[in-house]
Image (cartoon, rainbow, N blue to C red; front, side, top):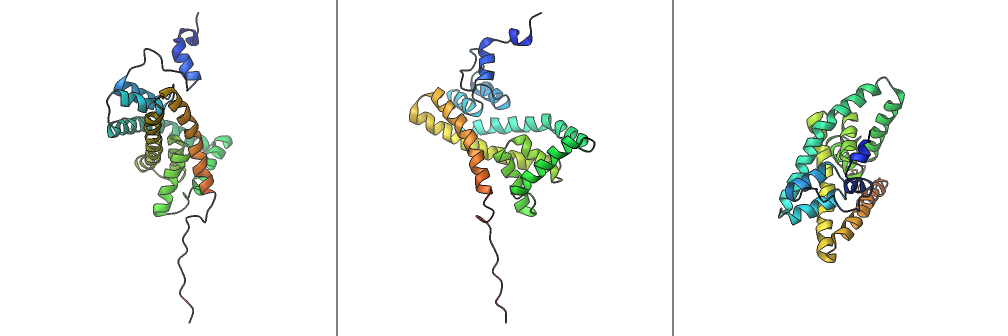
Length: 215
């Protein structure tokens, strides 16, 4: 009996294995094709989705709306996994340590602060790591479904806008979409590392209120 890998079209398998490979010939175009790439990042993920949306006549804001919808969809499909990990973490030491690692990651990003500082920490985790990691850090800090995912999606949307703007700019400059996708895949790896390096400097953006002179 043939395996699922044998039944998978070769061009789709290549796209899954190699992000710089062209999309399958049967892949939808326009809004649907871009939306599917945002939900299932094969063949270049966000950069390829942005270029498909552009070729389909979608505006900058329409493309961003598609990505936002994909984030909301992922929030509903991934939330049960967050609940499951929290439940397992109460009984399994390994999962509990992973959950604690998310809390430490959030603390380094300012998550341990209160008010605006704490919320920005969650946004930064989603920006630096991933959407689901931002939600996990928010859950570790005690945020529920709506505020937790809202902050995580905010960080992921910042990441998306950076990639979308860079993708369209490089495409206009080079006129070679395959080259642009390859460059943006490298940029998508470097960008989170740059933010993490920035956050290792705790006093870079700190502000100390001056104390009144003693009498």
